[in-house]
Length: 332
Image 1: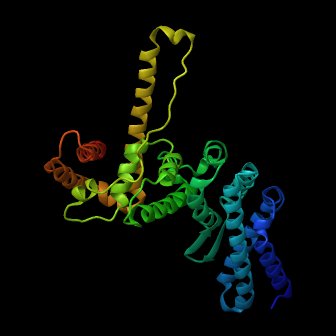
Image 2: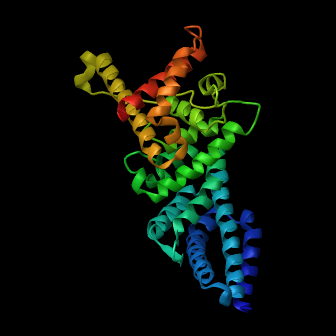
Image 3: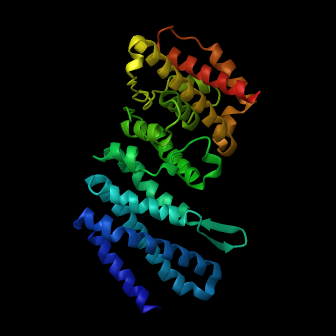
C-alpha cells in the first residue's frame, strides 16, 4: 500500500469537506486549475493501471479512490461557482483552457477499449451544469460570454466533434428525465433556456416540439394523437431579436426590419431541419423517427386527425406536418 497516496486521499477528503467554506475567488483562481490537472493525472493513471490487470490491483484501487474524490471536488466547485454567481469568469476560463489542452488525450486500456479524457470531464461537468445553470444568478452572462463555444451543438460541426456528441448525450438524458419524469407538468424554464442556448442555430419553438416528440414515451398505435394531447413544458418562446438599422434605413425601416427578421426565421427553420438530418445519422431515436418509411406513416396519421381550426391541438398537428414534410423533402 502506497502511504503517499493514502495521505493524498486524506488531504483531498479534508479539502472537499471545506469547499463550501472557501471563497469562490480562492477556489476558481488558485485551486481550480490545479484540481483539474490532478483530475487528469489520476484519470490517466487509473486507466493505465486498469489495463495492466491484477498485477497492480492494490495501486489501482488507491488511484481510483483519488479519482473519485477529485471528481467530487470538481463537481462541488462547479456547483459553488454557479450558485454564487461570483468569479464565474475565472471558473470557465480555467475549464475552457483545460478542455482545449486535453481535448485529444486518450488512454488505450485494451486492444478495443480506447477512452478519451473529455468523456469523463464533460460527463461530470454536465451532470451539475444542466441541473444548476437555470438557477444561477449569472446564467445570462455564462451563456453569452463564458460557456465554451465548442460545446454548443451545431449541425455543421457535430459529426466531427466528440465534445459536442458528449454534451448531446448528456442533454438528451437530462431532457428525457424532465419530459417523462413527473405526472404534474408545469412550464420548465430551465429546460427551455438550456435547449435554446445549447442549440443556438435552430428555431427554439419547433426544436422543443421535435425533442418532445422524439424523446417522449408514447403509444406506438397512435403516436401523433398521444403527442398532441401531451402538454408541452418548454419551447413557448422564440429568440429575442432586434433590428437597429442605420440612418439610410429610416425611409424604409419597417420593410427592412421585416426582411431582416424573415431572413433569420428562414435560416433557423433550415438549421432545424439540418439538425434533424444530422442527428438521424448518429442517434437511433432520430433515425427511427425520421427515416422515409416512418415519415410517410406519421404524415398519414397526422393528416387523418382533425381539431378545431384555432385550437392549440390543431396548431401542434400542423407544425408536426410541416416538420415531417420538410424533412421528407430533404430525404427524397
